[in-house]
Figure 1 (cartoon, rainbow, N blue to C red):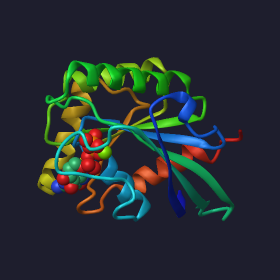
Figure 2 (figure 1 turned 90 degrees about the horizontal axis):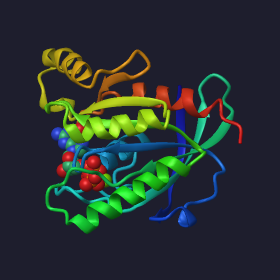
Figure 3 (figure 1 turned 120 degrees about the vertical axis):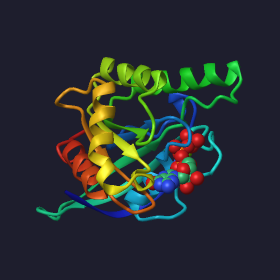
Figure 4 (figure 1 turned 180 degrees about the vertical axis):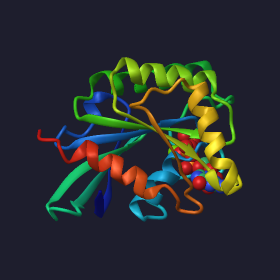
Length: 208
Ligand SMILES: Nc1nc2c(ncn2[C@@H]2O[C@H](COP(=O)(O)OP(=O)(O)OP(=O)(O)O)[C@@H](O)[C@H]2O)c(=O)[nH]1
Ligand SMILES: [Mg+2]
């Protein structure tokens, strides 16, 4: 488990030459447009407005890097990692050109980023597994990323419907034992400890 001590927006980038230097472990957030990636980042960091959010899909258009300071609860040793907010996919009102540039941007990030330690893949708890989510999952598996699947907007379901929805989605996505799925809600602030725990496991062992 880790405790976040500071968080700052670092930079936005399209191409690898614009990425910040690989000084710390990175955790990226991927998923469809509007699924709640930027909201989840703000919720985890305890900040309302750090990552830009919107009611309309397609808010995040670039790769956004955030520098995060943390302390481990056991050792109280300070450390740093980065959070990477990725632009979403699956938004219908996007031109072919924009879709192609998204592909290029995301492909370059996942194939070339050595500092990447883990990816949180967000999926709306109310939806069926979408072919686009399965394509993303397959790409992340192909890159051998450590994965956490977060079923977002859990506040939209009654508490007693959540385990069933998680089980159903896990089955549709054919998740393996290493691919844990948790319920998350930025609105109700649930699932925060699960995500921070998982991030902690993936960043504290990191020595660059
Ligand atoms: N009810 C509910 N709404 C949420 C939750 N998280 C996000 N939202 C809403 O969903 C919408 C989209 O949230 P964003 O965080 O901007 O989504 P995103 O995945 O970053 O979207 P893109 O940047 O377009 O890829 C906003 O209107 C949020 O207020 C949640 O946990 N519960
Ligand atoms: Mg966003």
